[in-house]
Image (cartoon, rainbow, N blue to C red; front, side, top):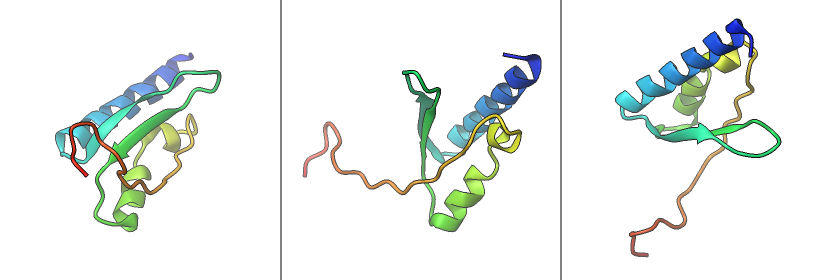
Length: 82
């Protein structure tokens, strides 16, 4: 990675850390495999607020990543009945 790329990803990680501190981020991390991707799940009141949050990603804004917003509905969770 170039120093610019490393700085962009550092800002991305800091941004995710702020979302975690604010109670918006549920989980985040890179995926394995041939294609470098990551997943972040966060709480949002509605689609507009979700888009507003995603639009603040420094890595995507710098052209180092492409954010994709997808709705998610919990189907199963360990330790959760029905």
